[in-house]
Length: 97
Length: 97
Image (cartoon, rainbow over all chains, first blue to last red):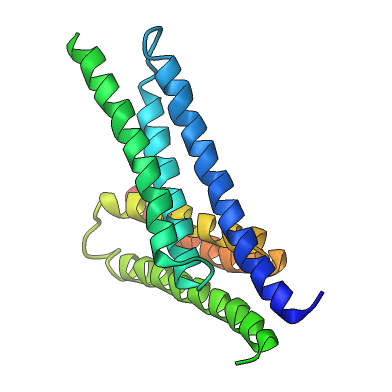
């Protein structure tokens, strides 16, 4: 493999890994959304918060390391935060109802 | 800059960033060790645990992304864990004394 291909590979792999990790958090959010009407595990929010913190550290590192653009990192985080906000709104509605 | 230099740069920068982040945690540990005899902030351990978790996620990502060798990652984490263990032992001794 040539050196430019190696550099591209590092950057592409970094982005793919982050997208995979984001996907795992999305999955956690989906599972919790599906369970809204049946039961609610109080530890779930804490797990999600911890996962989001760990993931934001990964993204921040990837940006600082020059592997992904700052905007790409912000996009991945924003998307997850929007999904989390939808979940928390639904949890609030359930708590009030 | 040539492509091989670019790849080296990415890997060197990744290692340097991780060492800097590890250094920040070491500093937190040192500060707490210095404060052992004067006062103890109960939130300090939680802050350190959170920082260690975030840092371990960074290191894990760097290894998976092919930026640092697995052994190099383990070395950085082990060193921090040893320092943390010394701190916690000192805290235990203080709690008992």
